[in-house]
Image 1 (cartoon, rainbow, N blue to C red):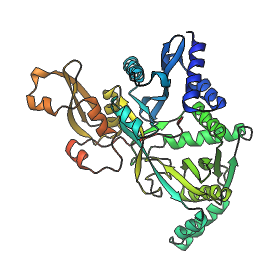
Image 2 (cartoon, rainbow, N blue to C red):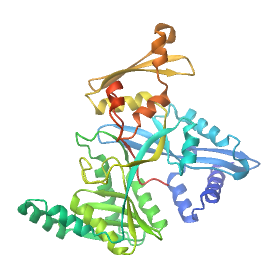
Image 3 (cartoon, rainbow, N blue to C red):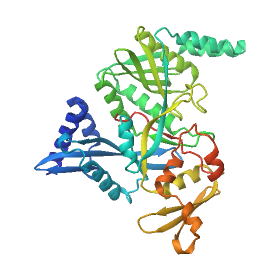
Length: 405
């Protein structure tokens, strides 16, 4: 099959599996299809199983990693339970191991798929929390309650600032001006690259083209985008919204301050007065700046899973971000019977290979494989400190949003 036939065959299988519209599938493949980044199984001239890989950067303006997002994993019903998809994942992992990508990740649709991917060496890696508000919730009133706790002069300053915020809504690609698209993408990228000393993490970094595709995907899926600007015409918040029959979902919200948070949610709620509101938030960065102080209660659910391709690069990223780290761990490679010692200290990582006959039996038994290390690195951001106290390895704090899910 040539490249065009492969692309069309994968699009057909995607539509038959996920029942997405032609417009949506065309948008995804026109933006992300790369023949070097796909795996598929062809039988009798038809593609019966396929997956699409999309490269993304993670980190911040100082240090970055490359991750590979697996989406559209689909198999014709007649060929399921034959190990085809597992084989495609292994083929891709083998090809990408030395490609500069440090890990693969995906977003399972349900717990059954989580179990499926866990059996294929993926671990829970990305999390999000959800907060629900009733149809009668008043965000303006909530904001006023918060302001009333401030000193009167500070309250007046913040109140005037809030009153000067202007909120706007975009409902279609035709309504989106080029200048608006530039404002929104520049703002989100600035938020994603923001790196306070207290916030060292593995957050996704979208390119401008990726964000433009996410904006178009929102409109194609029947969603809306809300944003607000201050008196200096600077964007201070943007929300991606989809309204269902029973509630409106804010599936991504970036804001710079508390006033923008309440103004945006209030504007969204005013457009859907009879619906409850569901707000997704992510562990890092997107909700109100430095420490997520005003974000919803951190009751995280599993959102995405990851599988390590290059452990050294991930540990190196974390060591460079956290100069206070100091640890030594042994990791075993079950394929070649070689142990690798990783030592992190003073902002750097050193690795050395050891033969099993040069270390004690106890050390061999205590050595972890890369999947076990992944489960430690990608553990829940609200997990207790026992692991960190024993191994001195903090969680990566992974964060993804605006994905094709």
